[in-house]
Image (cartoon, rainbow, N blue to C red; front, side):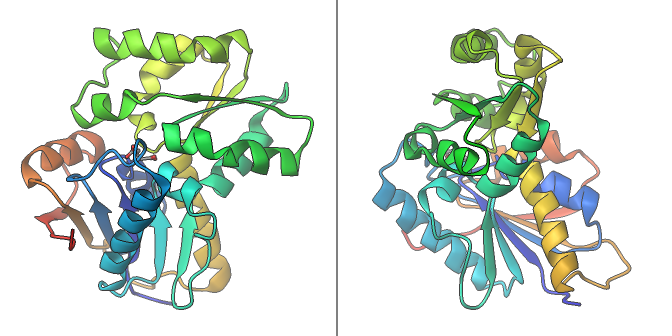
Length: 269
Ligand code: DGL
């Protein structure tokens, strides 16, 4: 048993897809979330820059004495190949949980992965999927405009700019007849309705953030580090830019009734 909080971070609001699933699965856990909204997007930055941002994000969460760190950012998870271990606290990214869910879901052995440019360029999803099943064909596509669309609230299924870019980006996935599509950037599940409308209901969408939350539950159960708290856990959300837009997004994505404390923090830039 361990009553310390679970730490979660992302470049912005994408990691809230992981937090939403954590709250559903583990309502008694305390959660500390960091969204680096001042520096989003990470996915168009160099490897060195992404690593240095990620180290600062991890340091921030460590200062909150968290028991586990969930890297709810596809870009950081893909770039930090050694993200899975740390001396003092377990650090887990989205790649493995998403890959396992996708490999279990595909029936025609054709998996698509949409993510940021950095994640697609890293080739990590293809490598990991093929190491599990070399017969699976993996089709990758970077969707760089999805993150700014989501951060600015353009997510509705009938939103013309979002639909325009989604149709363009997803054309290859339809052509390649993937039956399973990994949303490898944690921002993308905010566009689930639109993506599903374009791909069709027979294509399984895998939310990498939600899969990471399920993985956290399994790991903590196995390690006996779940909280024994009986009341609702505390949710502390931090962003690095103004709380105004962040709070609007929190309310939109986690719901009005969420009892979260939202604050701005300064990482040492
Ligand atoms: N949610 C991040 C990811 O999963 C957003 C990407 C970005 O900051 O560019 O990659």
